[in-house]
Length: 233
Image (cartoon, rainbow, N blue to C red; front, side):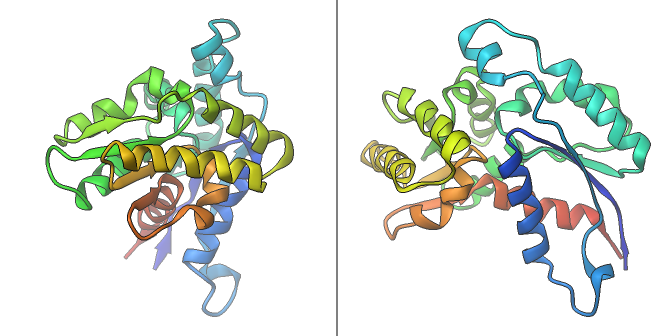
């Protein structure tokens, strides 16, 4: 079986990019030797302009040109397809598409499709993510096309605090408590299916699952897509 090389636009943030690599390795363990793993080209670029500064604070550089440059580098280096473990940065996916001739694995649309498989038309899908993701409307469009309703924690400013804490100190209990409370708020609004749509929050995913709510980690969705895209029979 041929395994195509997947290029990863990473560094947003670095720990989440490493987590994607770990999950790909864990999901497809080596049966015999190293050659059983998926070949990845990772552009770990923490210098991508802040999505939060650009989208929420209204200042700072546009991340799109940098993401386009990264995509070109990965294509030139031999990637057959691209993936990006940052939900917010998917707002700039058109810049990536337009920069290269290889496919881009869209984590947002695939996660919306996965959520639809665990729900029915008209259901509320809760989103645990940065307020920047909410501002872009990317999940409203993806889920709306599948006749699902997108809902958010109210207010959602504490989600930004949780992301900042993870970037600064890692996945600690304080941050887990913030995200758990947000998930409970979404459940109270009627959401039985929720998308963990921040790759920093993926570091907490094992502690968030509970019986009365199905939480789908978008990083898990991307992991499976990376494997399926790489494998060529």
